[in-house]
Image 1: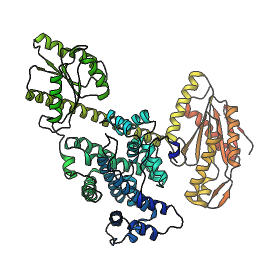
Image 2: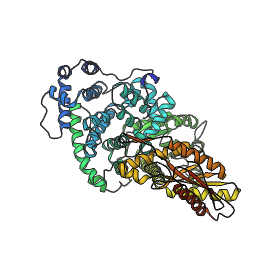
Image 3: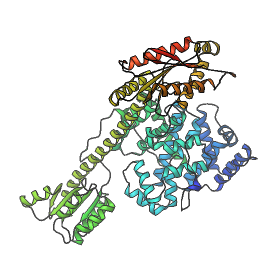
Length: 638
């Protein structure tokens, strides 16, 4: 179980989003032991808009059954727990459609959240990982921590959003922690817990942005829900992305869908009706949506060509010129005619300080200026990590080839000779836009390759562990035992340190299987494995080599030390009866012990000698140890 954050433990200074009116009354009713479904339904009916939304959700959850026509029936079908979550989500959409955080797009937030909720509902129907209506509420509220930070810290969070524009969700969380000492995932999980959302849903919400690095075992329900949320978030990104950005998102979408067993050929059948549902819900909740082409077209279309005819996003432009009128004219034209975001500076030194704060993508700078000229500014920008990718256009009345060569050598990307026309400047900005978008595509592809490499590394580690582990007991298997024994043998030879091994066999295991079946035998194997692992020396390796046999490798252990350890293991197993199907019985083991001696040719010979001791212990009546030294077998007591 993952430790979930508590709202009281998080230092959140401002006011958090809270339900009001009918929603608050419904939540209070749902927390009362004496409240009935009829009480909740009567309260919901006082808000006609909310009543319609609940009825619509109940019909969506019914997936083709008899339609729900009344609030009473909707509440009964959905259940009090889900009604509380849905009322909460719908009321928050109504109350927080706008707010004081300047850079937080409230409408875009709810549009993305709605698409996440509908995506989770659809994924749940396909994968059967849980009730679709429960997962709708989970997806709808999964990113509530972002709204909470925008509400509690409108000014500071606006600055965080400005500094992380275009960055990943994990980078946003890092910046939130640095600036506010809390991130949206932890705060959102704490709020959901406070609102009564089950921990089985809150845990995946907390970690869904980590992808395969989330702390859940593959195949568990928590893992499935976490990956489904990750997929839903990317569907939300796709729904809101401009046309030129969709191609890269589709590739990532396919990769994430594969983690929960949704194949690429099935994704279109899932997404196309989902987008239609998103549009219908958007009209009901007054949330903006978008229209996408069919997924088959999105998936098969080539990457968009980066060219001057591409309607890309506005650029962050910095204008640096010591002539105030020129600076003002260019800034006004870039903002009003081209729609770019503009920062202006009168000289290079001021521009450098502003660039650190605003991170422009394009710099239009005059050459000759006081304090710091255009060449010095370019040189200073290129000396920083973040300034190397800025597209620098030099504005100059100078035009000799030697001067231009100097400018390009210092890192200038393009130039305009004064006086210049706005048409010429527009053409230069087209080239700058292509460069910026290529940089963004490269960064996105690089991040995606890193994620894929990380996922492959995690998968390879899991496969490697699975290949070297016994599925029933969790002990190293025969393949791993051979490798470990080889390492121990080589180390023993190099350092001339002792090496011993034990061969252990569960006595009369066939009769256990006959009496209790293979399931009962598995219980005994798992119990004995746990006892051996818990009682062995700290540096010993306990392995299951097959059936009811175990190999214990004892580095730096003499034959006498290994014999003492073996006797302790034997007594531990004999003293811990096992219960199968309500019947408790004693289990014993026989053990053969051998140590590397001068005449031991290799590791296989060492194991064979321990095997001889094991068979001798069996032949002598079982439940005993037998050590083998230079061909002599010495039996211990039973």
